[in-house]
Image 1: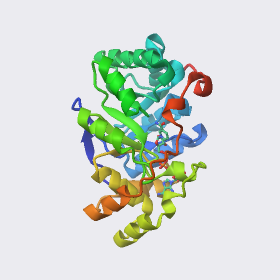
Image 2 (image 1 turned 30 degrees about the vertical axis):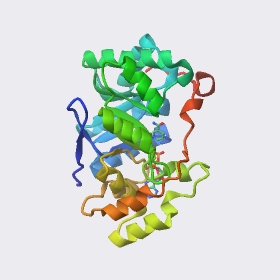
Image 3 (image 1 turned 135 degrees about the vertical axis):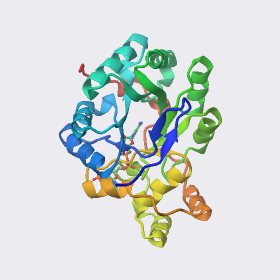
Image 4 (image 1 turned 45 degrees about the vertical axis):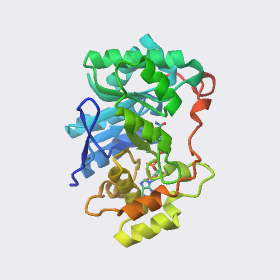
Length: 292
Ligand code: NDP
């Protein structure tokens, strides 16, 4: 079984650098996917209230008996102080735990930033009460982080953002590094470039990534994951296929050179695959999160 390196968050909590993502994993396939991931050796799962599969994640983790770092996200429809406290109750009950390892805000709501701040204040309360071991954000751009830090008493431990070779957001990563906020890469192998019409070609078909993979006798996915870890990011690849689940964890035993890292960095197009953070509104993206 592969040993996964740990990252130390800004409050001293240890988190496995590589986690297992379950976005778009249907609830009826989630138990098997998470069980395969735990079998392969993952000990960190990234889910979200909005994914509709927290319950199945919790069931698979409980059935395994393993000690697993659980990360989940509060959806924008549950922003506001009391609403977010209740969002924790819903997620914890579905996951079947009393305490969540890392609870993050899924998106900023730029047009209603006051509500976003109230949601974050609720995370700070949950943290002070020991109900979560660490708190953070997702899809926060520099302006959102700046506005948050102006009011926050707890610096977010993590900002989970889109990072793959075609979109690396160096400004957001640098701001995070300067403030002790760990960048966690979503779509770390570029899933958004091929499972959705993103205007990008698939990162898996990129000749430069393919060339580096051939040099090391590895796959493009393994090269991209190695790139994240060597640059100090957390990454949370998703798969429902047991072979690919194991492949994505099997990234020890080779090292990318500084030149190879620079080649991967040089593929950035500056064009995101996911939704524009400025366009996230309750009207467009809001939907109720069911009770536990
Ligand atoms: P990924 O970069 O993890 O790619 C997932 C896609 O790649 C799936 O289609 C999967 O298919 C395929 N795949 C997985 N492994 C391999 C492999 N080794 N070779 C070839 N294909 C492979 O993209 P995601 O967007 O899913 O991001 C990962 C996680 O990040 C999500 O599951 C979620 O937890 C999080 N996320 C967070 C967001 C946010 O807004 N905070 C937004 C998007 C994602 P298959 O399952 O068939 O293997």
